[in-house]
Amino acid sequence: MINEGLATYLSNQNPKDYGYKIEYHPTFEDMQTNDSTVFADAEGYALSYFYIAYLVNTFGWDTVLTLAKTSNYMMAFSRSAQDVYADWIQSLLMYQTPPIQATNKK
Image 1 (cartoon, rainbow, N blue to C red):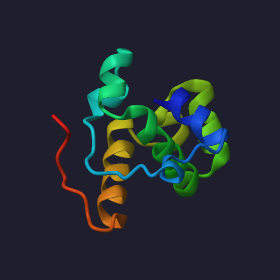
Image 2 (cartoon, rainbow, N blue to C red; image 1 turned 45 degrees about the horizontal axis):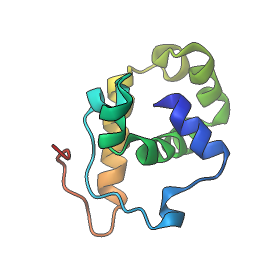
Image 3 (cartoon, rainbow, N blue to C red; image 1 turned 90 degrees about the vertical axis):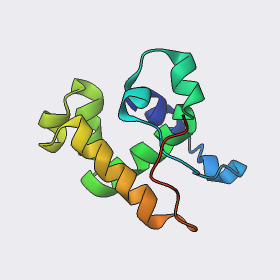
Image 4 (cartoon, rainbow, N blue to C red; image 1 turned 60 degrees about the horizontal axis):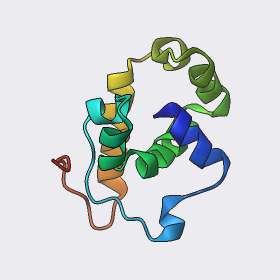
């Protein structure tokens, strides 16, 4: 998810610019998968942009670069990947109008 998110974030491909609306959230496992079909079905490519934007706004660009270089959430954020992901989901739920449901697509 990090590589895909960085690619869309750095190229300024905000899915909202193309009419994308966040209507659900995927599972942590779906977003961490190496299976491109599962990732795509979970709308991972679009959502990974929002994940990187959240990380940059919450932790700063240098910290996100540390994650990109090391793939180590504890080193970058002093938190587990699951904890960071859970906080991101909460941010999506709080700031959506109307609020999205706290369930995944499946």
